[in-house]
Amino acid sequence: MSESHRIGALETGGTKMRVAVFGDDLTILVEDRFPTETPDTTMPRIVQFFESHGPIERIGVGAFGPVTLTGPDRGLIGTTPKLDWVGTNLVS
Image 1: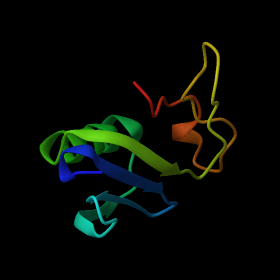
Image 2 (image 1 turned 180 degrees about the horizontal axis):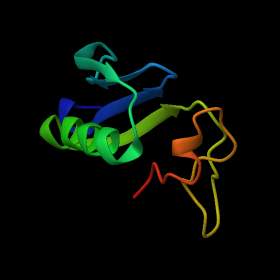
Image 3 (image 1 turned 45 degrees about the vertical axis):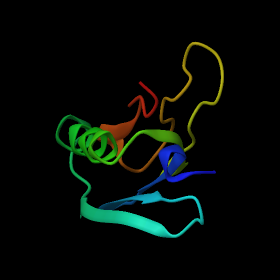
């Protein structure tokens, strides 16, 4: 895998988000952390991070609630203690 096929990582935490981009040898090329706020304020920051360090081939996600994997609800966060995030789409 070349660096042009970078891999992203996203951890949605209760108090902070962690994002990273890995290179071809799976070392971290760049990473960031920022507070978990509402989806309206946090999602644009996540998108901006990956867009500015791309192209990203795929992104692995560790979420604070289940994420629907298939069907019309693909990418939506389900039941979670972070009530503002229920129904937030992590894919589109």
